[in-house]
Length: 228
Image: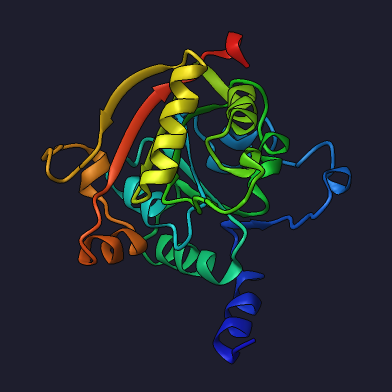
């Protein structure tokens, strides 16, 4: 492990906008995360909407949206501490009090929020895992949508941005077969010239994919709880 990464891990311990809960086994997860059901009252100290970025990496969307929408709260989730370091630093350097990050496995997401506590979820450039037979590990599988439904408000929205045709088609099939409500879809986001939050912010990896000539796909949908 490099010295820079070790230094970032050490600095992560000093950040007041980062919560680290690394568990390999679901049975090890505590039943009551201290801020579960209390993110607005005890951390953000407001009643504003809560938006999550799952697999946030360097937190480009989390911090970018937070700067654009100071009256909304944003929480980024990722397992990689060195990447989260950048998001935490960006939030602190820009005095973004409406930002927090959680280092944990996303499969444990429902242990961090109460029912109906979350307004929106962004899934940005997740690992498509094309060679793994267990599709349940993909972040838009039915098993993950069930987790999201347990914390989203009934009218809550899920956004996906991806460069992967495989992952996008998998998601589209999951959404359509589950009877979930598609609100918007683009098979080539920038060719469609969408003027929205989805195109105003480009993540670190998104810029790399665009430079390589890959197209960016996007879908926005509401979860049909009755189908899960």
